[in-house]
Length: 393
Ligand SMILES: Cc1cc2nc3c(=O)[nH]c(=O)nc-3n(C[C@H](O)[C@H](O)[C@H](O)COP(=O)(O)OP(=O)(O)OC[C@H]3O[C@@H](n4cnc5c(N)ncnc54)[C@H](O)[C@@H]3O)c2cc1C
Image 1 (cartoon, rainbow, N blue to C red):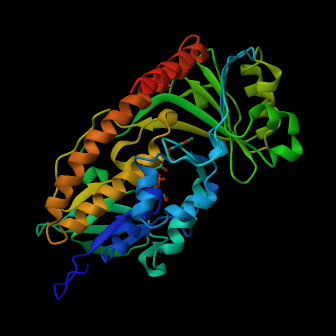
Image 2 (image 1 turned 60 degrees about the vertical axis):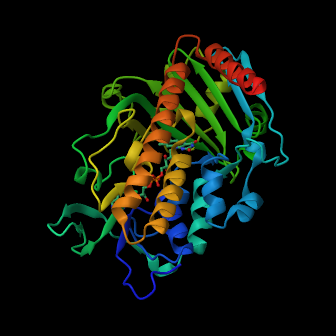
């Protein structure tokens, strides 16, 4: 599916996260070349973030189009769908054990972010990705092309630029003045390495997937990763400057952990073990979001996918799925209209706006639910209503 004698117009993808890599690979499978500019010096996906569940209608669908579905099945962790919800006293509200047999129907198997990116990277021609290219600024030229200015001094000019450079996109300002806002959620990431061997009781308590301890507008979340660690998030619905005003010395891990334990002092001891047993490294993070239903002014040579287009809180587990769904839809639209990028962008953006606004609403609803009064009971009630609804269909 090449353009024959016509010269291929130049396509640049900014950011080699799951969205950018999926896009580059599906384009490549359609004979369309692109260049991916990534700010890091090498792939850092293993160091960034934990396990992700891939949904049938989005993440898994994109992997099918990328020709990676069978390989994914050999790596997918169906048992990672185990899900427990407790309140601060240790009362259990949800205790679901996953079916470990892939049945294909609505299953949401887990894969670590690093493993997923490796899968994509193994198939992408090595010279497609340029590491160490941090986009500083993008400028629309009079002829409609975009000039990309990188921090290392390199300048490129392309017909189509796709921002897949995450929440703080440097491509987005070409399309809108709207910027991300603080979502009201701050998360502290911790890690319990080799949990089954080092802390068997906690590992058994957590089971094979996710554990949500929810109460008092706070959360302790445990998530088993493929490398045997439990990734832990202490999460707070709290004002934006809390990381500074709390006085917690996040660069002094031992003391910071003590201070976190003080905040959760009236919580069940086993829930507090998630903080106690964690390694001495804490990663505090404010969670940002774009307005729900956010759209931009159409530009025939520029578009966005993934977090750059619709970053949302992680409480609907949709971020990576949406990034891969966008990549799939955009790649297919470009393949359909390889000689008319503006048509491709128009078709893609209509589909993306509809799906992402729905997921952003879901994500906002779950965030509010998980940090409401009696959150554990509310989440259990909500999930059973979804199951009832599903069973009635
Ligand atoms: C704590 C936390 C937990 C999460 N849990 C889940 C979950 O369970 N399930 C789920 O689906 N999603 C989850 N997410 C969201 C998910 O990680 C993101 O939605 C997903 O990674 C978006 O992919 P992306 O490719 O759009 O962007 P990113 O993954 O952010 O990738 C952007 C890439 O662009 C590069 N880049 C950035 N700026 C530049 C620049 N100026 N120049 C060049 N390169 C640049 C970055 O280095 C990076 O490689 C979570 C997020 C957080 C913060």
